[in-house]
Image (cartoon, rainbow, N blue to C red; front, top):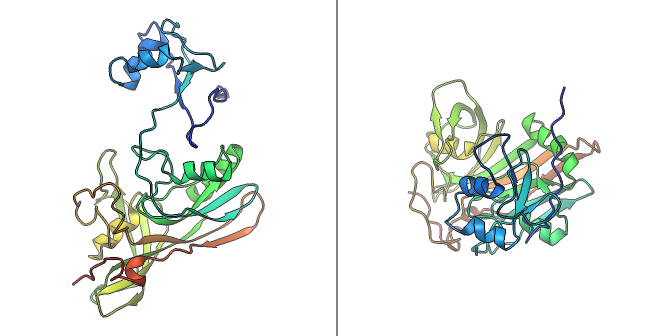
Length: 318
């Protein structure tokens, strides 16, 4: 069995907790120079790649700048830093609830992405923790939606990340969520929902389709009030994108603050943090695959629509 070729270490340091971009040149193609390939691949505006090359901002594995006329070599790696645009700061703390030599467990606020993606790069939990804790090799073992608050597991050493990711892939992590949504006495709970959820790339909302179930969620009602609000305990047995939000909406109980389900709402203005999605990853428990320790973590965050709906600006559903 042939081994995968070793990826050289990045010759550029991180910036603001963000790794440099790594590009591997394909094994074949029509390009004569590295420059030609990057122009075709990166889809950058005219002159951007040439300017980066002229300024020495694109480097090879040895850290030396790549020139415009550097010959194309199949399998070659080059690195550069993406331009970091100004991002709206998420004005809520990212709390560390546990840290040892192997893992970091953080209690993520609403609106903060877990890892760099799209327009959210520097303002992410991963980048913040790398900077604040001084752990440049920190990685996420799983991910929460940007709009969901709660517990996220990170790994300290890259070589150990796979062991913790396997916990999630093999469903050996106990996860408990809390949600605030309308109360409907006609909806029989508790119940376990099973359906097939499809999330297409480039499409904002996921949808339930015909086919064998790939999403399973147990839903319990834990409390309700005369004003029409209710609190729910959600136990996902699978991890499809937007699974909890889709299943709650399918019951006619959309989670408060959800901009996608049951219908896609107009985008809010940048910096509008008034109505966070009322979904919280409350509990995370697992057996540590390296130490054998039994971990159980509980989020210290509260959902504002339940604790103080009037003060937080929530209107109770009618």
